[in-house]
View 1 (cartoon, rainbow, N blue to C red):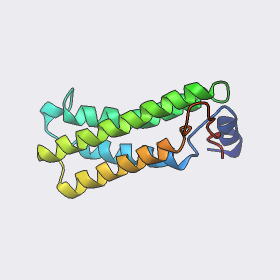
View 2: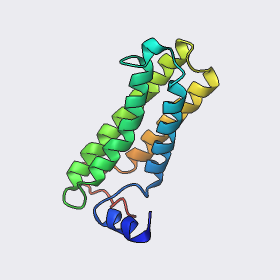
View 3: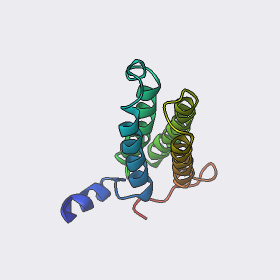
Length: 139
């Protein structure tokens, strides 16, 4: 991406430059690629599909919320909270993948740890108490 497009994205509340977005995106690609080897029955509506959906949702919700900045910080926070929920959901699907033998314990643990770290990072974008304001994701 050239500098002008990057700056325009930030001016519109873009979040792609945030470390939490970059990590979420990378993890979603890792999980997606690995889930393609899960059994066919799990590909549509099953564990593979749900894991891919939840992992991509973390990124998508963060971008959608970022698109609402700077006009609406409360809307941004609402989307970040939903992204936290998606990260937590993805952790559950990682457990299913491991328990069903589709992912190794090491692989599933790394994914769960990754989603837990994303949730912690996302919590940092949410005001600590009612009435507080969240810093712009550009900072």
